[in-house]
Length: 269
Ligand code: ADP
Ligand code: MG
Image (cartoon, rainbow, N blue to C red):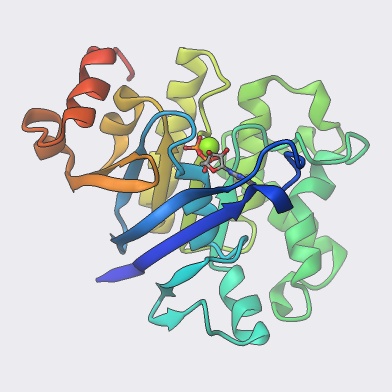
């Protein structure tokens, strides 16, 4: 069953209007007529070089940015025409994990507040999350599910290593019990061994909670390690999509061959 259906999705950035300033003109077709499905419970790996449109596609699917044209269905609902209240409800089911989860957060936030924030924002729609004690209990559970414990709660994000910070970011993303997570280069800033631990954690959480992932990376070895299927993105287009076995053993597109050749077998376990 498809959890996500993307149809003819296009995003054009008008450079004159963007924050890049007026010295550049014209437009960038960051996502160009992309169609794909993501099956319930799978990990779809999205791989491509920097600037190929991966993050833009991930953000479009979550409706964090407006598409220029095309549609996105989540759980059968068209996100491009959904009402605000429908979107608000669906947003709990869709979360994002970033490369650096704390880049945009106030460093004065305690870990407890970072993880509890989504619960606070949605507390009126989730009765179970009302009350400070229940919320703290939930934060404890979430920390345990990412391999940490309550001793982290009063501390600040900057006191933790990159790998631990990513675990805290994952705990926050899990707070509202989502069905679908876009992981946008979640291990790209980490050492290989720490990244491997995070990848294994994501797989464990997928089994425990029945999660569906769109896993974005520029690294073919990481993507092939954990993906059910792989979509290869090049200049805004999906040039090839299929089961991991098929993409890695019988690549059809030159660009896929290039990505495979540039990244020999890596020991990620
Ligand atoms: P990737 O994640 O694969 O590195 P992105 O989706 O970030 O690629 O970017 C795809 C293209 O869209 C790039 O050319 C980038 O410069 C451009 N782009 C991304 N976001 C914006 C924006 N807000 N305004 C203008 N151009 C953008
Ligand atoms: Mg990106």
